[in-house]
Amino acid sequence: MNKLSLLTGILFISMSLAAQQKKSTSLLDLGIGIGSNQQIISGSWVNYWGLRKSQKFKLGVGVRLTSSFAIDKYYETADARLTSGKTGPGVLFAENIPANIDSFFVGKSQINSLNLSFNSEYQFSSKWSAGFNIDLIGFSFGTQKTGIYSHNGASSVVQAKPTAFNLLLISDNDLGSLNSELFVRYKVDKKWSVRAGTSFLFNEYKTNTKVQVQNCIENDRFRHKSLYGLIALSYHF
Image (cartoon, helix red, strand yellow):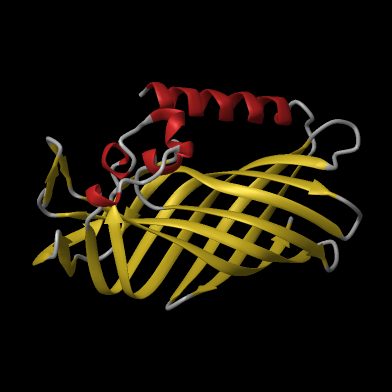
């Protein structure tokens, strides 16, 4: 809860400072991401507040729905206590422990996530800008899947559903399914713009039972990390 409180505080302070600038803009966005045997479709609403007099740098908050589709993917142990043996900020610099990482294989998967997002963007000219956004908190849903859990060469058939609660913490400390984007935007006219860049997605399944027991830690969460090429269309209002 301390991490959640810190995240909420940072977001609140950032949005309060931005809102003091008064001028705001909103947009609706539809994006498509293509990866290896996987695709995503995302739709979002974002409200931006321009900072300082120039209004070139903007901070925003939004809501994003991401639907991901994948074929023949391995979801690996997600609990940071097992993946690297560390939690907190140190997980960013810790190496994975291969012996602690099991897998959950799914032939066809789909996960839908609805999250609150943090957004930032810098306007270089009247036409061009660049930005970054990341999901903060929300929930995921999808159908139950039957897959193969593997541990030390042995395997078993298990069932799993998307992890219901999503929360941005730090790297492998994250919970659930979270999307982030790094992009360049071109403004076609006052109402329309196009974006291109990359999308980095954490997707997570939770097995019906705690199938992995290792180092006195029980685990039922398995994650797949994916990088996508991104293209999107935005309507400004």
